Length: 395
Image (tube, rainbow, N blue to C red; front, top):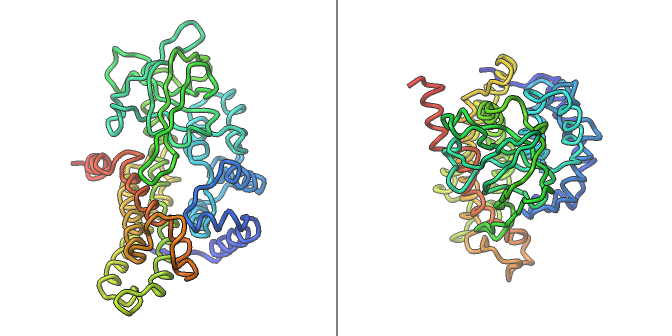
């Protein structure tokens, strides 16, 4: 496979880099480098800068505000955002519900929701997982009962990322309890301000609050908020999850983290020499870089194949990206922990904070803990291996 980028693609990469240097607020970049959580206002302000540039929904069709870029340009754009780093557009709106709406929604839904998603006028969250339905998502029990021109929704969703900020949630609900589990599910858009919705925070092991439980008690939703056909939501969800798994690879994030590992390992000493000079550590770092290069090549194969597939058909190879991408993200956080040793402990300030190599390390341990989840969300890696076995290998 020829992985050399063309002169035009290299010029595009430099255009993206210059834009990031000019437009990303320094404080925002510094917070990301330090592993700190951004506020909602910080994220929305940056995404609106992207949208003003015309890059907020870059991968959408041009008629809905997209750029018309090639799949390789999209890859370069996302990689540069992750490596700089700058916040990538809100996945729940831009990469998940947005493509579902413009692929399967009606014209009224496209006209109303798509501009609002692009400008982050609505912050979206995802209502898929339930306490008893995670990897076996088709076993979900949240029900939507139709009464005249409304659905009445009752049930519970969990692990709902950033629901504390959300204006809207896209939900999988059971609309035909008599059908087999995959056949009786619908895809419904719900206003988070609706009466009967309760959001309860879940504190993660790193001490953060990014996930929540969401309860629905007789929540009334207009029938016009149904996307596509009733009881066909499982197919729309598979389409959405295919997009999510490609994004979970996060090659740029791992590249940026390896760059940071090398920087720190060349300064931090262990046994009287820099950690980077330890043969055992170098072997582990090299193995991780080799895995990352293989992942990058695989992702490039997937993105160049996107234009060849039919409308609404997810690529099952995206499961490979999800598996390896999440494993590499976890490995890089482990290597950062190894470099910093006790200085990775999650304290606000270390005693030797005057040493520049010991500054900004307080988020390394929280990042390590937080990244334990990436092999689970978006469909656990065990489930992804089953998909690869059946849909890719045909076993």
